[in-house]
Picture 1 (tube, rainbow, N blue to C red):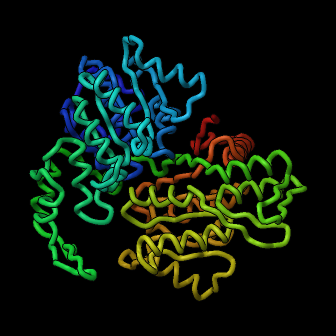
Picture 2 (picture 1 turned 30 degrees about the horizontal axis):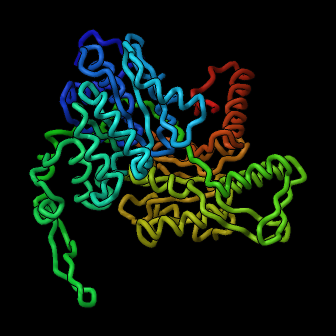
Length: 487
């Protein structure tokens, strides 16, 4: 680690350890639990290597909801002031201004160029072509890094295969994730192959599978296949992973702040964008089936816009219209990075019911529970008791903050997701403190789902304004809370 490197933000002890272990290695994995600051570690690693003359280009890849955060917050907040850098953000459908920005990557630049792309782009010809060009042109003195590397855990996926090829064009490679093994030890293979082909000692997934999985021949009609019924030699696999990775949990980081706030940006589908725009402009929308949705009052208009963001809308006749919302996938992506229990808050009962069904389908029946107005007193007590039992299968407490945000202790969770906020500061702060209270042994991470340019941003800003006013009146220092930058 560069001794005289000037950090822009002071690193925690575990971050210093990760930087020392990574140093200038060609390949390395930061397996750091959500909330431990793995983004900062990669940025400082890049800054150090750039000042040593090793790297002048970095291709940073992250999920669609995360990559804007690298551009707007992570890099500006953490890159050393000693590093001259520029950020170029990928767009699949660029405006004239964005086209010029993308083209500027070909221009001479004396500092460090950080090119940020969403991982989904590598499932398209345009994204794969761009990644390959960047690797060929700039990879010899460049680094490629994937944030939330579980997005390439499927060795058969198009983007996984594309990124494996592109990675070979870069001298330095990094992967980052809070939980590299989400469903099976076999998840690690494709992520490790990105760092270096054969790094785990096998040149094919099937050879790797035969070594670490217990297989049984099964039949489906006239077809046979090998079914995984267990795992083996995991101690050996752990030693191999330890040779190129640094792993840390929040429970091991004694100097972390008690609360960490972050944003997951969620784009709108075309259908959502059209509905949202209609309600915003005209306070009404005529659906394809002829049903009418009106929002004559401002408060109703805000409610309808929020409903659209969540994937449902109630017509004037009281009928519930539902449609896909990327928010559900965003929640699943976040939870893949997390190994423990979590709270998920939404102001809408439809969201709560939908999420419970989705989570149970992914994590098993009984892995989640709904907690809202219609939940009986007996059920409420049982849900709380089961959630607080560290050995119980109930992992996800999905609730309305007006119902579940007061008077109960849920400190088995150290991750909190806000699916749909409201303007009520009291319910927000109370719901935050359900798990951040006496008995909590770990720092707590709060994630807000935000669709840029929508009512989401106005709600967060309103809550921050109320916090500021309250602190001013009471003569207190304004608390550090969620900060977002409007597009």
